[in-house]
Image (cartoon, rainbow, N blue to C red; front, side):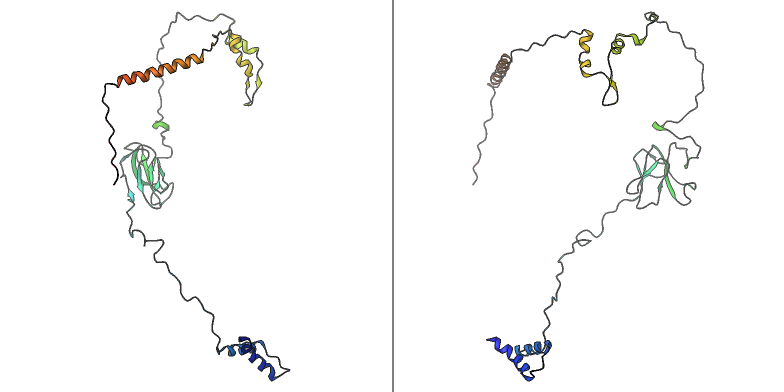
Length: 270
């Protein structure tokens, strides 16, 4: 049994002095000596780290050099463009959109009007920035003066009109007659009947007639409608079935003289 062997050194240390109490450290040393280990052994520690066999991200899995993004000028100065044409592709803001141009989400500059491309600077906006614009006419230069006439919607320009006096020929209409005196638009039958109606405020804050009044408008106007007479549905169903059967028989007679291809026999799998 191991219990007497382990506790024997403890009894021997206590027997040396009945009044002396051994500290806890001496008891532990005695236990270590009895078990046959003179020096304390450190606890085992993890001495290795597992690394991944392949890189998860970055250039290791893909190409080292991707294709070019085709940046730069797409339209030269003086070239004709239409709305939506990309004039310059860039990363950043080397060029800014000027007259009749806008920025794309990738900083490309595209045209918003039809015209001719211009590369220019505008000290009134910024002393150092470079702008790309679209001139509406080939002989125009950018930037436009502050007080210059601007083209409006539909590419139209305001032009002064000179008044010219032209003789308007008189037209004679024989079949039109003047309305009798005392009559007006308000006295028409429609308006006369509307006066007798009581208009109420609806949900849309509008004065309108009630639904039952609108439904009886034809009755008040004296409109006569033919009464609906329902037919025999059973007889109608029999007629439709007879018509369908006759069409099927006619189709069979039409295809009776034609040769039909026999279906090919399926080969059994080995």
